[in-house]
Image 1 (cartoon, rainbow, N blue to C red):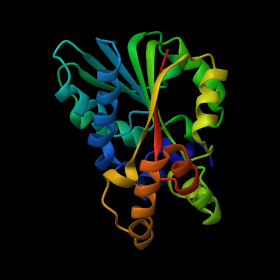
Image 2: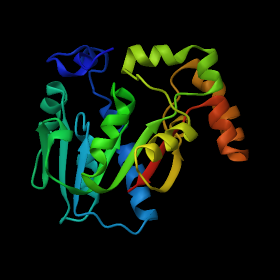
Image 3: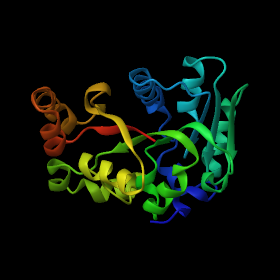
Image 4: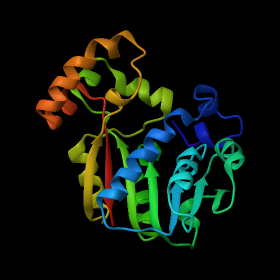
Length: 232
């Protein structure tokens, strides 16, 4: 797996994911707003690295105060071509490698990104000083049921996850790269999205019951969650 999966025009990633996951963007924006409401930070400039189709920033633009400026960066020309359809006042998208920019922001968003990056540790370190705070959304691919079903390799092929995390290793990775963790919580996609497959319908109620009883155990055994982290 290489970056060419994303960076070539009419890329393999676009063929596998023609919507560029735009349908999940309102839900992800809602999680980001929840984190901002839980913590006393008031960003006036927000950048998203790996912004994809740009709908997360578009949703935040619609929901946040009118003095906030939004910038999206992506190294995929396919993604930027989609995102630029959403450009407007205070919302721009750049076909640019974020680590090479000299700009600094109040808040950086890294939503489902660094699991795709070959040198993810180096990438995280290079992004650290470009914003006062960073919000990460990290898929928690490692669970007992996903390992038993051999789903880690399928996510590698379908959405390009090169690295896989559980809550503890995700947090340790950020701390190893110099980030200070301020807040975090699970995001429950298994409860919040329609259950389309037979497997998801069968496991829904066991997951929901176990999650209410013991969140950490449920996520490690049955999966279906990601981790949202606020760091500085």
